[in-house]
Length: 107
Length: 118
Image (cartoon, rainbow over all chains, first blue to last red; front, side, top):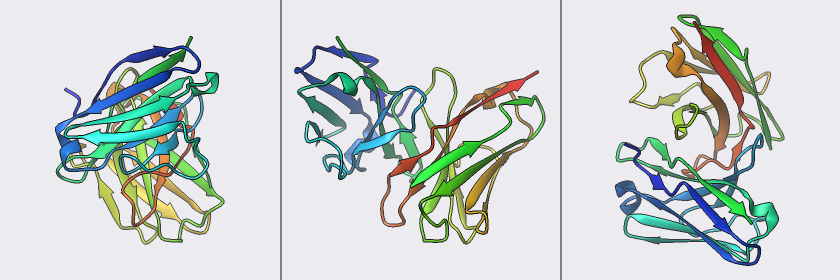
């Protein structure tokens, strides 16, 4: 079974809010990081250390953490946000682990 | 910073897979860690391991010792070799960078698809 669990898909209309969760025991001890991946493109870091946003990433992307669950929130979704989003963390041995990914569809 | 994977695309079962990641916009000797990550069809990403410019490497302990990474500082690239491949090694292979003081990957390549054929 995967160590980080994500919902399979989320569908939202433009301007609405999309929330994507990532759950796992490792998240109670380690930070989570979020990536956006469009088909055929390199993954892009959108949130690191649970809630920090890299320079150049729009403010509509935010992250939060509570216990063993982290949440990526996209406030005011735009058509260009349609992509797969996956989380990254580390297990107890320091090995990097990933969620399966959540497909965000903008209706 | 750009990373570009290259590889054979198709490898025969029991053979050896060799992949290279060319780095531009950054020196591989600057002091970052360079990783390989793969994603089998329909499955989550799997971290294979990371290497420093000195050659020091860390591997995913859950993987068998069929994986070997190396660095070519002159060509500013790093490589992955996988021995005795099987169908389970069919995946999209990505390379990525991690800064020495952070524990996430800040730059990735687009990935290269490798299929192991019987």
